Length: 295
Ligand code: UTP
Image (cartoon, rainbow, N blue to C red):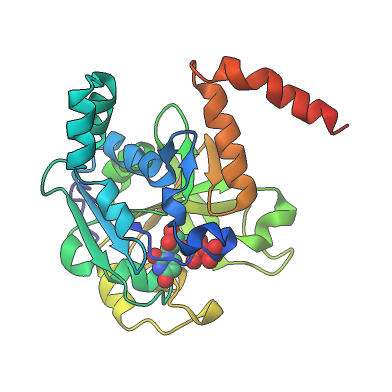
């Protein structure tokens, strides 16, 4: 039986190459691209904070050092802001700073796949269940996706994966789960299929990039062979774990923006801009005008 320890740590794999965003990602990690005025990674860290996460583990790689700098004090900048009495800006920076000792960074030397990136967190996470958030997926909902998952985990234990419904004709593009017994706030997962052949998907529920996993995943990933795309795939590891431990599906009912893709990133900018009282009046009419000019 899997353990039901508190979820204290969250892993953010940020070592991917971000090839879909070249040339920008030649010099800027995709997680640092800004949605309105915050880097994408900040939205995802905020979701983890709201879920009660206490320790933030970043799996970085070459060219990603700016992410580490972002979560640190910027001494000269802060002194300059102080000398100019820019107190609101100083407070903003302070509020976003993780407490000393609560952020860890380790490098995945080669981008061998998501499964390998997660395995790189094994020593920092240790023997306890942890959250895994794909840092290019921004979720928007009243109750954060990870918080909802933690609530389900507190009842169901084991492993939890957030899922969303897609149109049946798109199921072949995603990792899809099979739906079993209903649980309060979710359901038992009966199977997982990565990119099922058209017409064979067990449901329309796709895995959206948020996971709560038991630490046994690490020993599985340690010996996991390369799969699709010649990468060490997390899904292959989870399929093995599912033979030993229960998996529950959390139905996420908010909005998800895949900021690793251009369309998702642009839509996220438009969406979060119109959520903001200070920006909405500046952009709504021009956006409407832009769209109507297309017709
Ligand atoms: P993606 O599939 O989005 O890959 O990885 P990518 O390489 O970042 O982007 P593209 O497809 O080339 O544009 C999903 C998540 O897993 C991380 C990525 O940083 C991303 O957050 N990842 C992927 C790693 O940390 N290491 C890897 O080896 C692969």
